[in-house]
Image (cartoon, rainbow, N blue to C red; front, side):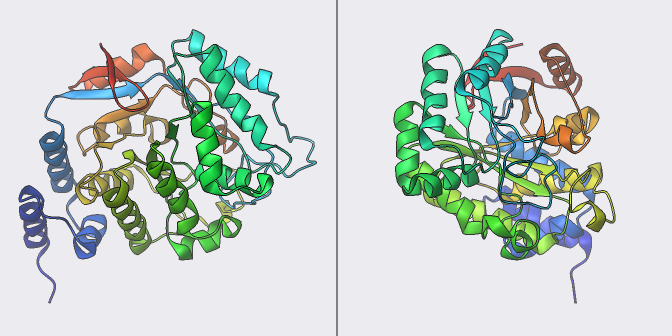
Length: 364
């Protein structure tokens, strides 16, 4: 016989407050049965035990793309174009650096650069982007290239992932974005992105990056073909890796945007704010070794972003002066620094600008 809902959550609360790690049964209960407001309150309290100050951090950043050429054919992506497509593009190094300059002029300290898996690009192209960003814009952190892009660099160059990461590090890169994880479940990845490989293809890149001194984020895109067990596979995988390396700075979940994607016809029900808040709060409680959890105002909307700050999140993400992947799926959301700080204050917190590595820069 299953325990009453209140009793099950009481047991979880006791374990969390006692510093004991939650297991999969706990996680499944939080994702599927726990009363939402009680779950949020528990996550909010856990956030303040880890980070007692009533501050919320954010980063001034931009997220441009250097190419949309890709041979991986992910079913959830509306951004990519196959080689030779009339809409395919690849920017020169100078064109990418012009985008970095435009972000720097607006005060950005981070540029999150991503693209497709373009087999026509040499490793020197990527290394030059890092070196020149560091040389021309020393105030900007090159938060470049997802795990799958790094695997593409390795395949094209004939080098190992280890060597590619070492060369990026030598060029001046020190952090990696967490994109490309989607759901770290073998079943889900085989369904929505079979050419990317299983969970280990993402995890192994971040493991090696952490060994070389990189810091990275862990992301999760839910709301497509996954179930609660797949979400727990994902949380278990990144929690275990964090136990091993300690290299993750934050967890960043967001919901899938189906517009113009091959996966759109399979999505029967939009996963709205309620599910987002449930996932976020569960992550704060389950990922007991992650220092930060990010609220995604961009993918979930600004009001939901404010509520998320009371469901375990302590970071507001970035300004994203430029963003094209969600735009390709007909989803557009923009913000200014002034609006961002106002929204954080309205939610009851003090805004603090941070670096890519979550170091405080300025209190607003």
